[in-house]
Image (cartoon, rainbow, N blue to C red; front, top):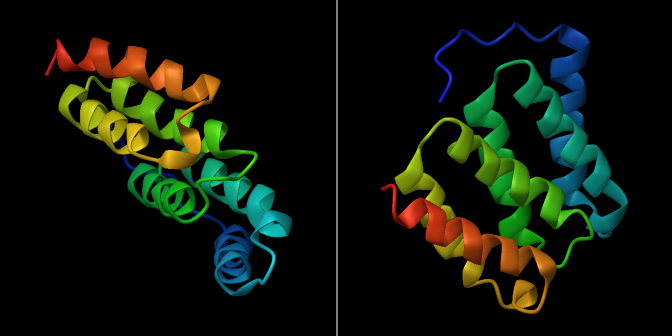
Length: 123
C-alpha cells in the first residue's frame, strides 16, 4: 500500500473518529450509526491512515454483513488492495467475502466472484 506518511489529524477530527467508533460499538441500533462510521473511516483513508481505515472497514463488514452500506465499505477495502497491487491480500479478502451468507444472492457477490478470478491469476 501507499508508503507516504499520513497527514496528522486535527484534534477535533481525532476526537470525532473516537466518538463515532464508541457510538458504533455501544449503540443498540447500529444502522443509525453506520453512515457516521463509514464517513469516519473514509476520512482516515483520505488522510493517509490506510491501515487504521481498513481495519475499521473490516470490523464493520464482519459485524454488520446485512448493512445497507456494506457494498461501499467492502468495495473500498477490496479496491485498495487491487489499486496497490496486493493481489494475494485482495484474493484472500474475496474469499472471505464469498463466505458471507448474507451476500450470496447480491450483485456485490457477483462482482467479488469476478475480482476473485482476476486476483487469483495475479497472486
